[in-house]
Image (cartoon, rainbow, N blue to C red; front, side, top):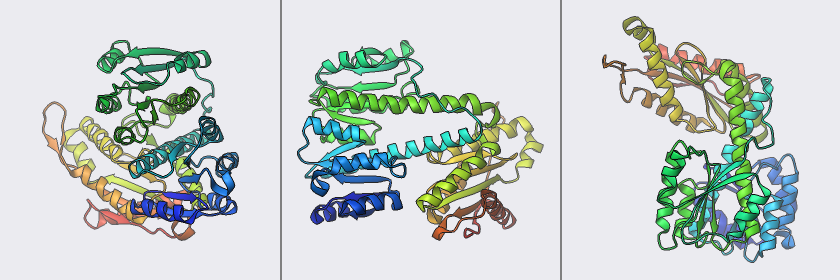
Length: 462
């Protein structure tokens, strides 16, 4: 399934219609018709997203959103509010209560799934950050500071439409920031020339040329200078074709051009806080882990980092009930490469294989180098079918094309054997994570002893 979604609506027709739409998109959907059901299911199921009607339980939707965000067991679950008549003050109150976004009722089909996907994408990123933060803390590294380390870099790309310019003055007065104003035609060159690393980019394209904003969004997401920036698209309406397409192209938020100033500033500030926290954690890991926890050759994490991370994944699995996967990968006949071409070429091969493997995993997955030519992969929320499919993809991508030897000295073909172990199936867990790694390692030995260049599934039950 693509994710678990809990629908909270006390109107049966609404629940049925929404469940049909989401189930058709392969989401695992459950529903709550009372306040008690909502609070209990949110804690027991730990869904990836809650879709909550603002009129739920006699218009208590926003209050219940606040209650869920105050509960340590449910505070990290994103909540999407469905509303038909929220005024600006109520919308702002819902955001302050913890809502991640809104959908207007009746729901327009084209706006539903992009906003669902965006909310789940944010959820996945935040889960990754919490896992990384927890692992770094366990290893003795200081947690990132809460305060911003430098004024925010905000780039405003102006066209014919934009929110009321009053937001600029208000935002400058409340948030330490440096604002840059560029046209759509000059923003890429100016960011590179002025060596700007934007925290936020607000794109308000010309009303008659909305597609230009989407093209610019794609370009920004492909450039190293702007890839990690939070990008907000200003559209004539947040439910237009261009607006909903922006989410799938990587926009962090889409807002209508007539959005109230207070709501726009809140959304802008929230995106800035998320971006800064991610940067702070990334810098903490880069500074502290690079020397002790990162393999200097491939740039991947090493065993010292991977095992505590795996322990946290296992603990999360026990809480959520979702299985998790461990893989051990080994390059076939790697010694021959070192003996034939030398260790410098062997190092080049290792780096290229590491790059291919990492490029074909999710952000939340971890890959580490744990031996000479041996790699460990940890995949949260992954069962047997997904594990096998991913392992086969990694095996194929390794051998898909030969690796060029530096200096035009030829090419080397390489294959990989992979052992896989899945934990948390049917609520069964191994006594410790070392057991999971051992089971994957035993499966790897089986793959190598029966011909290499294959995937072998190991014992998964406790």
